[in-house]
Image (cartoon, rainbow, N blue to C red; front, side):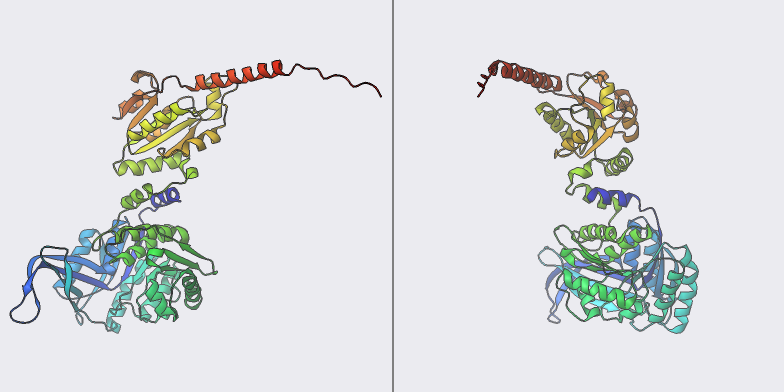
Length: 514
């Protein structure tokens, strides 16, 4: 499945996505918690540095940029310095802020965190100070926001709503936006806020609540996947949703669709350092995938990967497609998934080389696998980060005049045997007599061949060196070759046939009549 997801990521494109929600500016003051103040029984923090980060819906927009989407931000700030800072930070990331409205009646939402180290150890949060107004937008600001937003909806490929209950996502605003998106056939994905009346999200394509948010919405605890499926079916029915993604932290994501079909998409175990931002990362990933037309189950699988990478980081960070690809490429591989057609293999090779991995290619018939093959393939795998084995097709083997009975085993059999070897990352079957076409398409960093070859005797060496690649002949196992192995088998068969003839020449006596 990991190879399937690699192809999925490479087909995401650069979708246009609109983010609507509560913009938050996160300010951090870092310092050393030296002692208790003489003025009051509080910690004295000696400041080292200050940091500004994007939070709330602004963080979702930033994560979408990291996933290579074209992003328009919609929301409200105050007419203050923090509002200027948050817009400048978004624009510096590449976010279009033309739909961000300034409201003189409210401040920009700011969360100020004071992070202290004791004896130079890992910092901990000492205090958080929030400056915000939670009241719903007034009619004038709502109308101004909607007048800016509505003309943008038809040109979007997805709309993400990030609700932090700071007053932007009012029932009236969401009703108009969701209906307009439905009319324009634009999917709407909502990350809901706990404690809100979820009826305000009715008609959206999907919602992405976590375990606690789901429990609050449906009125019962979500303890396991059965509870999550039951909750998902209830939410789909009550809110007229196409599907629901219930995030279950280390258990993965429970997907429920409008027809009642449910599935738990598990995530692999990871070292969890900080869950901050994981929900935003899940929303961003599902949004990008939904905009690209990816199936709901694959959306959940991609969200598991991105969310898992997020919790392995300290603080909120963006996760790139390259990081997701690297994570998938390092994962477990099913034998059948290693055998790819050339077009798919080309995409995988491109992804690996973009990550800086060294790709090694070797080729051959591999008709009768023996210790010589295994030894040289182990050497080939050690030469780089990724080993591709190109296998001659049955017709190709016949064209090489190796004998009337060759190949002994069919191409699918030979490819499966090779794919079962741990050190081999990919197997591709080619029909030409030489691997030159493969080389021109894949452009491996290193071409290797096992045997007593000089570099100039390895077919394709000129092509590889023309674009800066390397060519190398690897060692052989003395006394072992396919020709020798087949010779021993045939000799053994002939000996057995002769032995059988000599040992059983006895003619049974005839029975006497009567």
